[in-house]
Image (cartoon, rainbow, N blue to C red; front, side):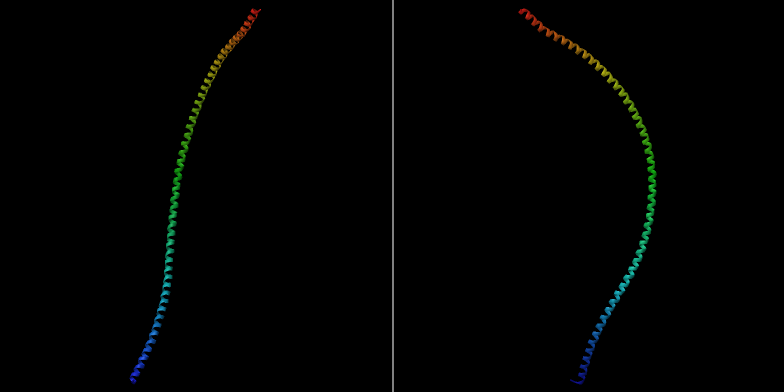
Length: 181
């Protein structure tokens, strides 16, 4: 092998070795760049996320404060409207209560009049019934007295007939004894 070939072979070996070494270094450098880039991206994402979270939190707090103030205003409006409505209902109820009391008083007076009239009618009917009962008692007593007199007369007649009937056997017995002698 000639000197030039040896130099060329040595240069080729050195070039190949240098190329392999440079490729390994380049590969390590590329991996380091990727790793650092990934870390920086993660840090940037975290920072952006924190910034976005802070911004969203601030916007949410502002919205909550706005909604709260609107809700409080609406609650105040509702309370005012409810109080006004309640006062209207109270006035209407008081009016209706007054009317009901008046109607109740009129009904009470009318009922009292009806009760008085019914009481008078009942008393009149009671007097009539008592008079009829007394009349019926008198008639019944009169009929009972007549029946008692009739019964008494019949009893007297029955006693007389009984005495007569008793006397007849004695008389017949006396006649029989007289005939036998």
